Each structure stands twice: as structure tokens, then as C-alpha cells.
Image (tube, rainbow, N blue to C red; front, top):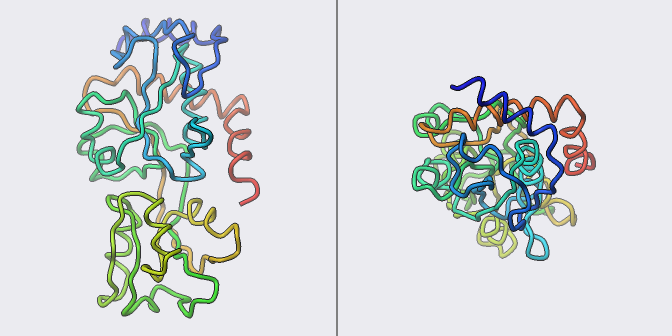
Length: 263
């Protein structure tokens, strides 16, 4: 890594004033683009699987959520605009989307695992999570053992799916869905009796009172932002430095409280 070059980028970031929304058209100067070998000069292109509230949300044609807002602040610190690309989670967690040059970085509530690290590199952890079992409020299912003979919805390519495969009864039928939108629709329609999913995401499904979380599973999961395995070393180190800065100056806590303080 070129330490002097990175130092120059970070020094310039302290002077960045331009707003960096997901639909920006390029108002920032993008002073670090040549050093980071970005997909689009002056812009940090972010791949994310939307929706996955409260991390990724599409509202009125714009992208928001904890991951998106945090990524926007990181880009702002690097004097870069942001562009969000909605991609499938499977291609993102496997590294295919990054290797194909669709984006510079992935921000999609992605758990850091040894298997994924074979194909992608992760930033420092920025969020700790658990897995949970969500069922209708009037369901007889109260524990994972009660899933025997039921249809259980999981999201493909996720650690929730892996946990269900390892811990659900053998005669539970696991049904995989490409995104949380289809997963949640399955339990709403009654085609799934329960869904096993990340805690903060399942919490959003309990807000109307029709569904409840009956069990939480401490899986020691930590989320990280993802970059391609080779060629993004400078970008990854700069992102980590911005994460530390945002935690130190209170910006991280402000965003965290915005999305999780009432959960």
C-alpha cells in the first residue's frame, strides 16, 4: 500500500463538503478515484441487495437504511459521491458481483465468514447480529424444535439458511428465497410457517403485531463491507479508517440510533 498516497486522500477528505446521496449525479470532486481504481471516477459504486430493512430500504425511488447511510458518510469522507446498485445477495456474497466490476464495494448486512473470505475481503466489523425465528402471533411454534414437519423460509446464501440447515429438525422443509421481500411474503401468505432470519430484519416484521420472534440465536456474527479480493487494498484501508473516524466523532452512533434505538 502507498502510505503517502493514502494520507493525501484522507487529508483531502477532511475538507469534503459535498453531499453524497445514492442518487447524486457527481457533485463531489472524487479526488481519490485514481488511487482506488473505481468503477466510475469520483463515485463509490455500492452493490446492495434491496430491500433488507433496516439496512437497505428503497423509499420514494431513493435508497436509504443503516448500511446505505453509513456507506454514504464513508464516501463523503473520501470526497466521493455514491451510487447504489441493487443486486442479488447470492452474487454479492460469493464475490461474483465485485469480480465482474459491477461495483467497488458491497454493503448488504453481510456476515464475515471464512468461506466468503476465500473470494472477497471484508472491512472491519461494523455491526453485531443474531439469528431469530419469526412466526405468526397465533402460532403454536415456540422453539426451533417445533419446526418438525413445517415449511421454514430462509434466504439463499445467508448464515440464517446455514443455521437452519444445521439446527432445524430433519423433517422440517427449508424453502429458500432470493430476498427478504419474497421471504416475508411467504409467511404472510401462509406458504411458510416460520422464517429464520437476522434479528434486526425480523424485528421490522413484528412492528404490526401480526408476527413475533420466539427465539434468538447467538451466532457471534459480525457484518462487514466487502471488496474484491485483489486490487482494492487501498480502498479497504481507507474505508476502515473512515469507519473509525465515524465511530469516534459520533456519526456512527447517530445513524445507529436512527435505525435501532426503538428496536
